[in-house]
Structure formats: C-alpha cells, structure tokens
Length: 131
Image (cartoon, rainbow, N blue to C red; front, side, top):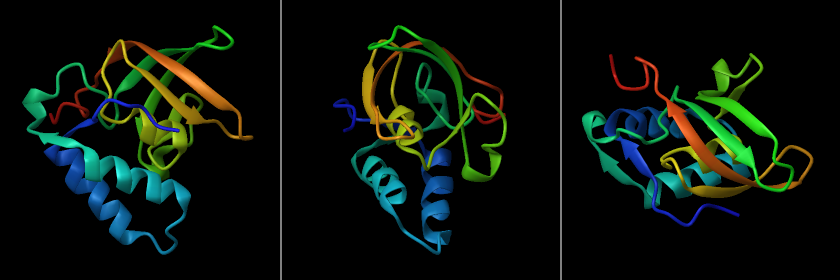
C-alpha cells in the first residue's frame, strides 16, 4: 500500500506531525499510516531536504493507470479546504510525504481505488523550506 523508499522528513515537519498525531482524539487508519511513515523516516535538517516532498510542497504527479496529471499541495488537515490540497492524514498525503521526484507511490484514493502515482516535479514554497 505504501512506497518502498524510506521517506525523508525534515526535523520541523517531524516535530509538527508528531504533535498532530499526539493531539488526535481518534487514532484511525490514516493516523496509523502517518505514524508508520514517521517511524521509518530519515529525519534531516530542512536544508538537507531539497527535492523532497515536505509539508506545503506542491507536487506535480501522474496517475499511471489513467495518465491523468495532478498538482497537489501537501497540507495539514485543517488546511485541506481548497481544490488541489491533500491532507497529510489521507492515504495519498502520507504516501507523498518524504518522497522525491522520480519515485512512484502506491496509495488508496477516496472510494477505495488503488493509485500508482509517479512524482514528476516539485515546487517547494517558502513555508515548505522553513522561511
């Protein structure tokens, strides 16, 4: 269900996501998936995460089955209001976190369909790199 490569997560993202998990009243499958990603992640300083999907990064990816392309911004659950944003507490969001361009991830979309996403391009924001 997940990508194979070890995710790379910035120290800042790790700390904020760990706090997010601690604050949850209900710990369902999405939180468990995120916790698993954090446990197996390589945690690095923000300046060592160039080319890595971090919180608030915008990712250009392609769904291999359909060829459809998406521009997704990885956000915290309370920020996932606009089209094109994906919460880190969704299967797609936790699968993207910590991955790099050229990698493929497998995750479950809303409705239960399995998606195979290839990461094509990354557009970090100032917020994503810690400014």
